Length: 267
Image 1: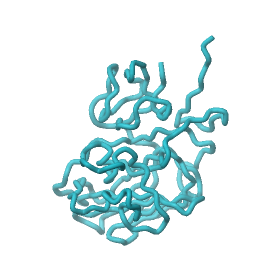
Image 2 (image 1 turned 90 degrees about the horizontal axis):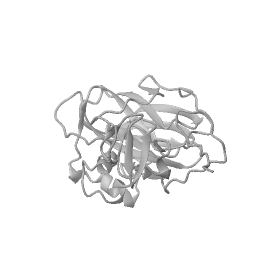
Image 3 (image 1 turned 135 degrees about the vertical axis):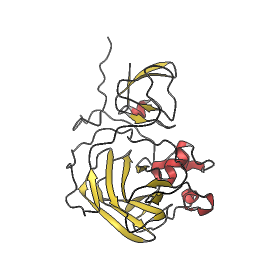
């Protein structure tokens, strides 16, 4: 008899405690759009990044650091300014999208330019959504800037760090590669509030994930990285068929497998 299996879906509320999904170690969260330095490495837009290209979500270090690598030597490539990181041309109000592959309770998110804090979003010590979006006012920082985005965890002394290179107010800059807008993750056991308890006007959270963009999704065919898949798209991976459960832009390490059941449903 064929056994029925329940698969997790981010849009749902609580899931039963009997279903356990194993995820890789050090899987947590990072800024996917505008493309952070680790997102550029993961997409292949920046080459020769070392281990960070396989786990862009893993830049974890104690709270209070002010560097792109969080002071962690294994991610030091992210603090290497000689690499001439491509900068995304943006307006003065910028929407930053975090993807969480492990949804830790959150103290807050902070944004810095040149060591100066420009925005704080209160997390209310709640478990965040799989995708968290903040709108930050950067009108006081025109031109090329490196924004340090920090996710401060609520129940540990740790934080996650992402640097995003921008040309604020327009101007020429590199073109970042396609980056994911959703995270492979299971549903939270407790549903977080739709908005943080408190948030400054300079950083307004948006709970609904943005639609995926990039190349058209495939109705059928082999799974490939760098493709914007749409809900309902069917692919083949390692001889097996899968259906897309959530629209997202694919990267290596998010192949249809047990880790990404929130994104792909085996057929």
